[in-house]
Amino acid sequence: MTPAFAEASPADAERARALRRMKIVATSFLLVAAFCYVLSQIALARDAGEWAGFLRAASEAGMVGGLADWFAVTALFRHPLGIPIPHTALIPKKKDQLGESLGEFVGENFLDPELVSGKVAGARIPERAGEWLLVPENRTKASGQAAKLIRAALEVLKDEDAVGLIERTLVARISEREWAPPLGKVLGEMVAEGRQEPVVQLLADRTESWVQRNPQTIERWVTEKAPTWAPSLVNELVAERAYDEVLKWARAIRDDPQHSVRVALNNFLEQLSRDLQYDPDSIARVERFKDDLLARPATREAIAQAWASAKSAFIEATEDNSSELRGKLDQLAGRLGQNLVADSRMRASVEGYLVRTASFVASNYAGEITSIISETVERWDSAEASRKIELLAGKDLQFIRINGTVVGALAGVVIHSLTLLIF
Image 1: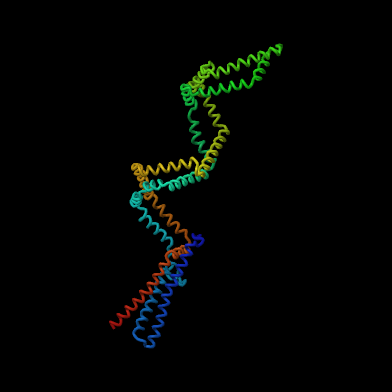
Image 2 (image 1 turned 90 degrees about the vertical axis):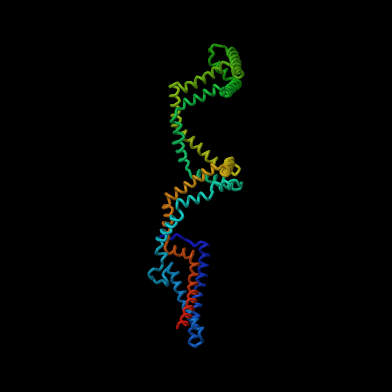
């Protein structure tokens, strides 16, 4: 297996130093007990008195207790003195079972649907979220995070995938429907309301302007149409006359809203709107135009360019704190916060959704969640996992050794005292 912990973190280094210090302290207690035992033996050999018996009993029991607890603590993580004694090095051997038991414990005690639902309901998440969003600094943070999320989604999404999605959804949906009837209906409403007049006026203005700037075009047209035997002077006079008449005609169209040409154009647009809605031939021609337009490579290129421009604009807007998009996100966050605080129905609806979601996840996916624990523990290297656990709990476990030495010494004194009293 590959060790799960490649390098020691600064926290692990600090835990290792603390563990070494506690091991030194616990071992010092054991050495003090051993020194007292040697001292008691010397005192007994010299018949120093009853205190020597108490000291020997205390130090001897203290050494036994300290050694026994050292063995017990060490046996959790490795073989004591490297000797493969049965039922030692428990954590490396039972690592997988430990992971399974830990996963089952979490699933049974922390992922119970009723418990999770109660915790979510009691947390008042919607109300607290609303109060948090009402603070301007928090609202700015929320809108900033939303902008980052939008930017990340746009950057991850490939352009060809986005174009394909647009083609399969928007373009395909547009191509399914006939274009002519809705276009005819819109055109008919515009003509009925007179909203085409600005366009007609623009055409009239441009026509008059073009005639005024291009007298040579009319002169050339008259010259080309005139008989070859006609004198040039006559052609020039006819051309000038024709130009004046055409210019007068163009200005009349421009200045008179009720001019016959403008009326004819309006009538044409009105008839076109009816044809687009009800004439099969006109509808068929528009459909052929639509199919040809959507099938052209240029259409896909236009969609790709439009998407690239929109994507670039959105990304730039998310990076600019003063952009309209960031302002809208901030306003949206503010309205959401106000609604969550003031609207009890909305708050209850959001809370109910969160409770149902949490209960559903706990009921249906508790096994998958707890399996992460057991599978993660299974992937750990046994020795490295044992080292990690020892770093986390070993410092506190050294107190067992200290307590064993101290309690053993006290027990030795009590036993020696009872022995003297009884015998």
